[in-house]
Image (cartoon, rainbow, N blue to C red):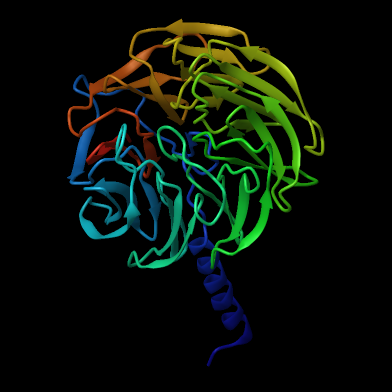
Amino acid sequence: MWNRKGCLYIAFIIMGLSAASQDVTRWRGPQGDGVYPETGILKKWPANGPEMIWHFDGLGEGHSSPAFANNLIYLSGMQGQTGHIFALDQNGKLKWKAPYGEEFHESYPGARSTPVIVGDLLYIYSGHGVLSCMDANTGDIKWKKGAFTDFDGKNIQWGVTETVVVDGDLVYMTPGGKKNNVVALNRHNGNLVWSSPAKGEKSAYCTPLLVELPSRKLLVTHTGEHIIGLDAKEGTLLWSHPQTNRHQVHANTPIYSNGELFCFSGYGQGGVKLTLSADGSSVKKAWFNSHLDSRMGGMVLIDGYLYGSGDNNRQWRSVDWKTGEEKYASTEIGKGVVVAADGMLFCYSERGELALVKASPAGFNVSGLTKVELGSGQHWSHPVIRDGKLYLRHGNVLMAYKIK
């Protein structure tokens, strides 16, 4: 017979499993900052680079990253002019694929946004501004909303690249309209929960950042000419800070630490650190560095130092988070994307170089280097680190490298 303690124990297990199944995947890692919690990784690679365990060919065109949930690997890719979600098992074998609609097939064609999975639901935002909610087990469409049809947004030069943010029962997206500039939708049915006119500017390729403060939760993102901070519960615009460049491209998610934000753009701009007020209702500039002008490669913050490469300023740099002081600048590999884990930087250049570098302000010291030979198109995708492996997508190929 079951006793009361046994029943409670089973109930707690079921509740724990249910909660775990509702974890939200995020672009650029669990905190959205490019730093992964992996430990025990290799500090040096063999001469020919890390071992490639497997690769999956046939993703179609795209620049998005893989997402991990439900013991599957999810990716978006374009075949013909149609975007698909691909679901792979842990060994890189295709379990299923399902179409979600027309993808961006003009300049730099292919899927841009990374899928977001919460339990049995998956969210994908197309380059044409259509947000689709799909069954994460089958790919069946549950509902759709169009940023340019259901709201008053307009597409941008190189197509929407924003990966939507899910929090609780809300999914946030940036249509970029005059009236519906940023919106929060009920993630279960797509109904509008709130709409903010914000600054009324077009969207700017940016995946937003959620910042949880003691008094409120902030949604921080870039639109065409400003960094903006909104109350995530109500959509009220709390503050804005000018951030302009030649093409209104601000594709990097801001970085948050201890009441401060770092926001950065390429095309002739740079990076600014902003200090938030205690309640998040205002900001003031702490410092600005024109060299920190990554176009879309991101940066990482580790032990008080920022690391990443530039756009016009092509060097890889380390910068003191507190002061903005540069510690080094290196051109040892081409400019590109950076993620990190266990005190090491994984730098993926636009030339297809994949380098392992110790995260130290003392210098850009490469302890591993390989060339990504498989795949197609631009070397733009952001790698993902999980369970001792680095997953790297290059166009139509996903590769899994052993790094532990």
